Image (cartoon, rainbow, N blue to C red):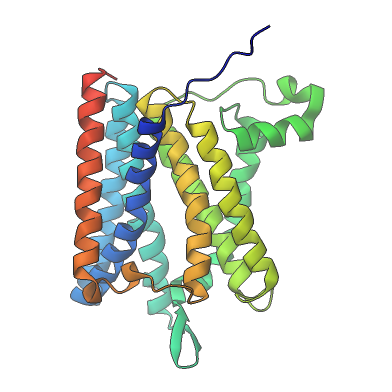
Length: 289
């Protein structure tokens, strides 16, 4: 009997991966530029508006037609929401109550907002409880947990999925994975727990790098643009975790942390992002998804 081979969608997967990947350095650079060019008051109002726009875009995506369009609304809505109402909100309260950055050898290695972010661990686990016990989803990670945790009782404990709105699903997925990634990195960097130069931190980075390739292999079999982009989100965020660790270890200079010193490079990344986005929009429209 001839073994059936899966069709792999390399072009679609690489395009989706690059689209999501480019949002990482661009998002970091945007935050730095806003911090450097705005007064504290203007920055907080801009961040408040940014998060609100992100939430609005996600809601608009609920009523959009087409799986790809709904996915993109949720993706960009989630990115703006995370930046405006999560990262900048932590920054606001860190600045307001005088939280000091972590300084080593006269250099700021961790900003105040990220030092207090681990305090949200309890809230994260509260959301995880809902995902594990109350949501039947297509996420391989949660499916694996439910199968091994509940066994034969899985269909009884997690009987049905929640109402599915693609835009909301992408929004929640993006924010939960970003949240998990930040918590992981902050606990690894903290010398009270592990430490950024500890071998365990490097091992976790290596595991995440290998994991990103495994997720990408799964992504290759997704034929539709919407599903491929949704799979690209965990692929990129897991891949970005070792990038953050290597940057922390000064293995390379994170140009997105110093956008004013690397204008040419950041403009190239922006143009590449716009090119990939334009190609994706054209391809999606051509396939009527």
